[in-house]
Amino acid sequence: MAEEALTQLQAQIEAIRREAFAEGYAVAMQAVKEVAARSAPEQTDMAVVPNGSESSDSDIKQPEPSRAAIPLRTGTLVRRSPAKRPTARAAATGRSRSRGGRAKRGINAQMIQEILKAAAPRAVRQSEIRRTLQDRGVSLAYPSIGHALGQLRSRKAARQVGKSGTWRYSAAA
Image 1 (cartoon, rainbow, N blue to C red):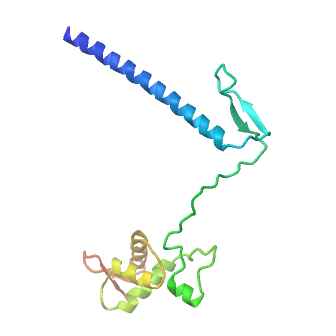
Image 2 (image 1 turned 120 degrees about the horizontal axis):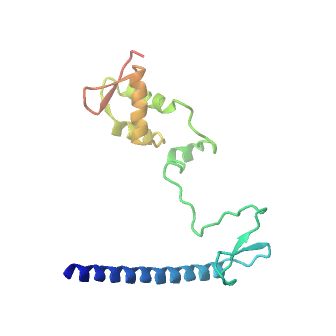
Image 3 (image 1 turned 90 degrees about the vertical axis):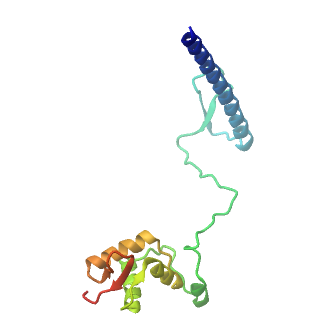
């Protein structure tokens, strides 16, 4: 008897939950329609596409298929990451990377090899490599530094000191 009452109660709760969801969804969709109607200017080259309902007032207006889509503009300015901003050194010398400037293949490993060579025979941690690169105006993520160190290890241009996180230049290359 108690199980039957519990089952009925759960069914009633589920029915109420579904009804509340449907009402909330309908209100939200109405609000979206109102905002869209207020913000979108009326255009004459729109085709009316029915949405499957009986009423014609809820038809959705779609642009003609022959017209290209126009991207939306946001009201905020686009912020550039610190790596994209010209460094103080580049601003002082008047030099900066070209607009389409993507670094050449293997340049990360080459820069890191130069840092290891300058620090030889002392071992260097990845954080120190990154700091030195940043002083030179280059921002490089730790995974990229690790990848470059792996490339240098395979070329026998650098070796890891034991199981530590430090690396040394190896003149065997």
